[in-house]
Each structure stands twice: as C-alpha cells, then as structure tokens.
Length: 339
Image (cartoon, rainbow, N blue to C red; front, side, top):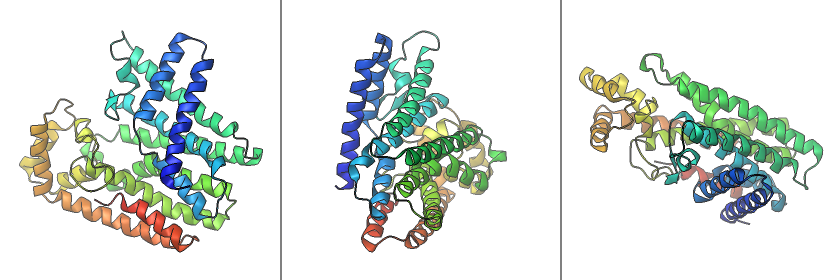
C-alpha cells in the first residue's frame, strides 16, 4: 500500500465511522452535529499525521497495514479536535474553504455556535480514544501505551496552545518562546506522536525512540515555521495555498513579523504595530505590510531560519536506523515543505 492509498483508506474510514455514530445517536441535535463534523473533516486536510505514522511504521519493517488504519483514524480525530477548538480561540468560522463547526451554527442565538464547537471537539477526542480501544489487532498493553501517549501529548499541546494565546505582545516575544510554543503546540502531536505510535507497534528500543524524537521535534517545528512563513509569502510548499494573513489579523507574532520588528525602520515598526490584530484589515493594507517585511529583510531572514531547521532535520533523519529507501521516502515528505 502506498501512502496515498493509506490516506484514502483513512478518508473511507472517517465516513464509515460517522455513519455508524449517526445511526446510533440518541437525538436529532446529535445527528446534525455529527453530520456537520463528518462533512468538515471529509472536505479537507492533508492527513499528514496518519501519513507520517504509515511511513514510520513501514520504515521500521511494519507489515500489517490494516491494523494501522484505525490508529491513523485516531490521530486524525485528535488533529481535528484541536483544529475545532483552535478556531474557537481564534474566532474563526471558516476551515477548508467552507464553514467550520462554529460557522455551521453561525446564525443560532447567543453562544450556541461556540458551544457546538466545544462539544464537537470533545466528541472527537473521545472518538480518538475509542478508535484505539476498539482496535482488535492490538494487545491491551499496546492499547494502554498508545492511550497514555495520546493523553500525555494532548496535555502538552494545551500548554502550547496557552502560550500561543498569550503570543500577542511584541515586547515579551522571544525566539525561545516561539520555538517552545511550536514544539508543544505543533511538533508534539504533528510529528512526535505519530512516529512514536509506530515505535510502540514495532517495539523499538529506547535508544531508537530517542533518535526518532531527535528527528521528529525539529521536523514538527519546521512544519509550523513553514506554515508561518506561508501566511505572508508565496512559495512552493504544501502550505502555500492556505488563506493568507490570518496570523497578522489575529495579532499573532510569528518569525517573519518578529524579524521585521527587529530590523524595520521606526516608522515601519509603528505601522506594523498600528494594524497588528485588526481582523478586518483589507488585502491592500496587508499588501503594504508584506512589502515592509520584504524590504527590511524579514522574508530572507525567515528563509535562512527555515534552512537551519531543514539542515537539522536532514541530519537527524540520517541517524535513524532505517534503510535507504525509507529515508528517501521521508526525505520526499520533508521536501514538500521547502519554500
């Protein structure tokens, strides 16, 4: 099975799972929420976390791909749970070029849209746990290890989310805080969790699992840094087609803006701070902001910063105890994020 076929299998399993849940739901309101959750998940997403699980499992000699599908499903449910709650925090109503859960309920009274988003996220986390618990091919010992890993990871992600929420004040922002936020909020669940799940299934040694983390942590940070870069600048990465300027409009400071605030003229810094966090900012004004980032060298500085992480990731990949074919496949995955 190829990674593309595996991702298609995950999509099929998502539909099957929700069909079953909708049939057994006890209220009309629950059925409507589940239908909207299913529609949202099926509509978009790269299935990057199931794909990394699949590639790592195969790289270490895993053969039983069928038993991997529901674990990949669990990782995707966990990811979607985080996205739904993240959208609530960011006051977003759109995801994957359509309404998110809050957006689906946007015309309801009072706090119903946000409440439905919270409930949908909570349900998805439970679904992630259920997908592991109900897996017939895993021993109880493996299920327990996977559930402990999922829950420990989730706690770390919430701490990262908290840091991200407070990441709105230029004076208190540091590169160290950025890296810590990305390592907790992104790397933990986007790279370390799927790779370590494969390690559990393959019963890898502690030494090899440390090597996996040595690779997965910077890869996960790189993943988020490329996303941050793509919020401002056109590029060739897998993130380029996402809607732009969300971070600036939400008042979030990422590496491109951080670099600009250090190097731009006082007049340009004042302009950036004046509009930072303005949710209704026009694309024309954002165009001027991007020009400032480019003219002060923030784009080039961001590219150089990314290159440092690419070098670290490639070096860590070389140290993994996997064959050349597997390394080439993972290299191709990394290359998707080159800007």
